[in-house]
Length: 61
Image (tube, rainbow, N blue to C red):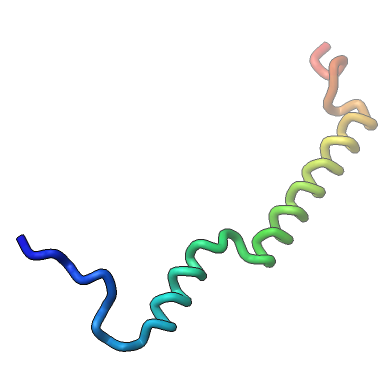
């Protein structure tokens, strides 16, 4: 079985390198903002429900 080349023969290495770096960077800034907003909304909802007595230790009785 022949060895496969380690790079493509297209001559456009910058595009291949850019897409490899882009895939490895992780979540985008927009995704971080969206998850942060969701977390804050859930935290505020949790606190409001506890303060109003809807959710908590005495809610089951």
